[in-house]
Every structure is written in C-alpha cells, then in structure tokens.
Image 1 (cartoon, rainbow, N blue to C red):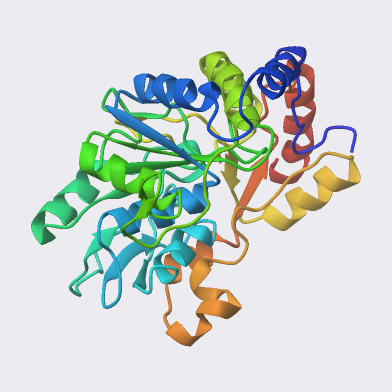
Image 2: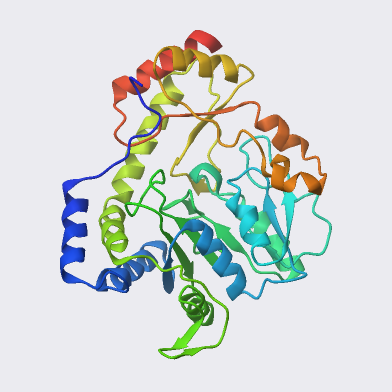
Length: 352
C-alpha cells in the first residue's frame, strides 16, 4: 500500500530498553514489570495496576476476581472485539449482548431488563462511552463495572482517565493499539487492594505464597522484556495522542461531509480508530484500495452474529445497520499531513 492502514513501530529507544532488560533482569518478574505497573497506575490515576499477558486475560481475570462465575450474567455491547464477550463465557458466565447507539457505536443499555451480575462497557475506538448511564445502570442493580479500555489508553471522561471510572479497568497492548509492549500484553487497574491481590494471584496460577495455591489460576503474567518496552511506549503516549487528534482534525476540515463518528461531549477520545459512517462505505473502501490506501472495518460482523454466538438468536438492529456503514481510516501518529489530505481527496471523490 502507498499509504498503509497501520504502521508497526519499533524505535531505537524500545530496542535499547528490551536489550537492557534481557541482559540485566529476570526474564519473568523482573524490575521492569513492577515499575511499569507503578507508572501505569500513576498515569491512569488509580491506586493499583497489575500487568497480565493480554487484554483478553485482563478482562477474564478481572471477572474472576469480582466473583463472576457459573449462573452469572454480564452485559456487554455487541459492537466490539469478540474478547469482550468471550471472557464472560470463559468464566462460565452468560454474556448478555446489548445493542448500541447509532451515533457513535457505544453501548445502549435501554433495552436490558433482565437481572445481571456485572457489566463490561467498551470505550470503543478510543472514545469514552457514556459512563454516567453505565454507572446509573450498575448502581441500580448493585453490580460491578469492568471497563473494557483496551482501545482507549489515555482517554478521559469528565476529566478522569478511563480505567479509573469503574471497579476495574482493562487494557490491551497488542501491537495495533495506541501503545504496545512489542507483542501481546495487558494491564488491569483498580483502587481496590483486595481485587488487585486477587488478580495478581490468578495471573500466577492462583498462588498465595511461594508454595501455597488457594484458587484456580493461569500463567498469564507479562514478560519482563515486554514491560520494559511498555515503559518506553507509556512515556510517549500523550504526544502520540496529540498527533492522532491532529490527524482527525485534518480529516474533519477536509472531508466534504463531516461523517466521522462524534467524540463524547463529556470525554476526550484518543482516536484508536478514526471511523467514518456513510451509506457509500463500500464505494469509499473500493476507491481507497484502488489508490493503494489501506482501510479497515471494525467490526464487520457484530458479536451476536458470529458463529459461536448465533445460538443466542437475538436481533440487535442498530449494530447490524451500523456495521454496514462504518470504515476506519488510517490514524497512526506517523501518518503525514499530506497523506491525510490524499485520503480526504479519495473519500471526497465518492461522497462529493
């Protein structure tokens, strides 16, 4: 592609941090892990951060630490990566898939009437969800909130970082995210010390002490070298977010129609994805491809229509319609102003 959809980043600073960790620290449980956790907690404004092996692991372990298990029901939106629902099933609980708001693709809880035991709102595309409605829903039912912030590192809602709003926040460091660890990785954030200790235990096979294990757990730790890279990435996260916001500003100014999904009026998006919504989505995608410009659809098939969930027999019309209209444009910080303008020209050929 002349302008790829995504560019993987690996800098000299990341390389130096990785080599230093490999040469000077234990491969597992090294000093970089604890420092990364401390720095991430400080960044999100939470008391505790516990690193894990992926965003999926963060979600699953958080549910377990909050006693979500057999017979539990947990709400999450259908417009998300499938891990948002799979993590619920991996605890033997039942996912209750909710529809979304057509304006921005975020969770809509207005049609959830059944009794549930937890909720996983998703800050989709890096844009904070309407957390007031989530909090009101959870308080009314006295249930925990597990934030899926896997796409929203540094996003804010009413001046607070996502991941600090609910009972637990969950982040992914997969290479396409706004910050990475040079592979798979994840983080949980919480103000509750007991929850943090449970997560630490479950990520390490249910360990209580060196030789005692008092609960079921997994090997879902973050490796030292990944943590070392993560520390470098965290240091530069805000400047990358600034660049992403500059890019979306170029798009908004130069597209013939303002078809970019809106930012939450109480929030600050980090634009993990810059998403347009348009009736001519497929034509736009074709025009971009013909001009060697990458694009992607997040998510072309809503969770409730995936083969593993079709037995749920549920129609969620907003998400089904939404998935036919959306297209993600390149949003990575390395994108130049000229490249963004070229993308606008191609889109404008279709939308006029």
